[in-house]
Length: 257
Image 1 (cartoon, rainbow, N blue to C red):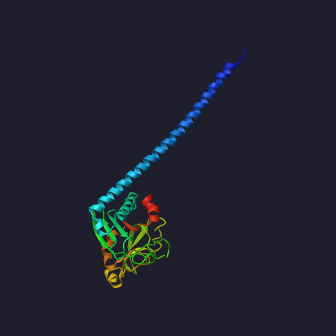
Image 2: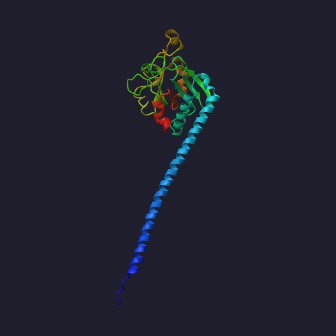
Image 3: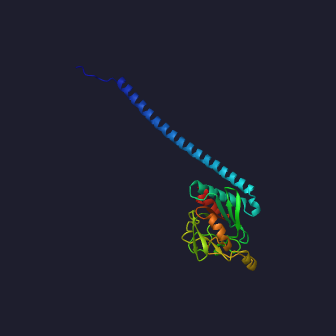
């Protein structure tokens, strides 16, 4: 049998083929990675656009409800309601609210001498109750200005809560609330922060002393209102304690998720 030999030209041709295949694979890899990166960037941009559109919808709905209900006349600021509605919407979207027709707002930017608790039927756009609500003794006197999530701080805690069950204790008919804003109010159950009635939260006390009573951190309401408000808000409604704190508004996981 005649022995086969390779000419330099054949070796050169083979080398060119191998080089071409190698370049093709490298090019395909680069194109693949570029396409993947582009698709990922496109997905991020689309998700960001969707979030912006959702926020515009949330704000538009809040504005509509606020104006339709003339909430400005009740002393509730537009910003307070907008933040309350934003958190309510997000908690509802996550399925954390069992009672979705009720939104309660404690507006602690107002004086404690104001009726600054608003219990709203958002489904029918009606104000169900507006009354006094106390803040923690170490949060301030007439105005609350300092807030804490720490044990034994005797301060109010900002943020969103979900109401749970009722019980009868030292302060009578009371309602437990679970803080769902990590770092701001998630120690509420451990701190025994509840909604309860108090004789020192009343028009009588305000007239006698010129300032409303304070609590160990609980959002206490007039005793005569517990039998009306607690049955309406218990078992899974949204309860929001508001104050225009830059730290809270920028770091709340509920508002910024």
